[in-house]
Image 1 (tube, rainbow, N blue to C red):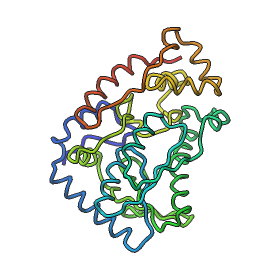
Image 2: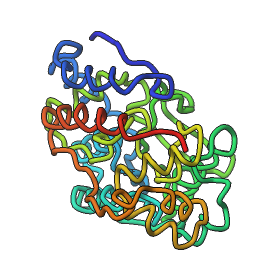
Image 3: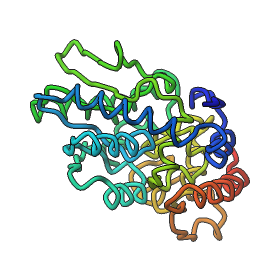
Image 4: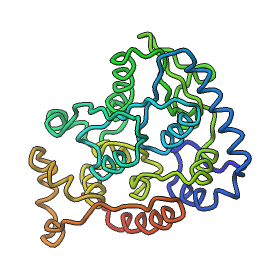
Length: 297
């Protein structure tokens, strides 16, 4: 296996796209299947005799996790989402989630965001609070509401996640989470997706898709200004900012500053194709377009 990708927080989206396009040069089908078999055995051992479920987000890690859980015989899962997620992403997730995965709305919406406007495109410590809102909080709710003994998660060390000892994460609250792919490099994950022809959501076809990962629209954390953040989201789906403008003054100011030809546009959200060869072409095309459109305001 050849490794070319580091932590997504410090990597370049173009490198991800190149790796995806040439993944067969970095990892073989046999290597992927060997690691997959080990992960399936890990899951079986972690859930045997226990009340277990897995967390599914619709992102690349959970797409792989869901397929591994299926192979291990674990069907029950939960998908946490909110009104602050991209509508096209949520639609994709509802259509492609495993049948036994139960949607779970977290309650966050524009009313909440209007009361916490400092969270819009927040960076640093404030931006890290999105991790609690969109991941750790829902994980705890899944665990305690359903009286689980263990929650299977798609955390990996290479992404900077704390994965405990050998993938077992024990929280002071008594929660137990297990990450069966904690030691997988990115190339192995992309290889599993490629060789098993698993679909990826449209979010990876948007600007900085692999670097940003799955996220709520106001969570985009590589924006140096509100103007840049709004422009990036507007380029993906103008209706998001149009709705936000009804309750958030900075979004309304952004729309009012747009040239009439832009502010009147009602373009549909950008989509990527289902499988990876089409996705790469779409990402390359859309990424270039988005880069041309984004400027600071």
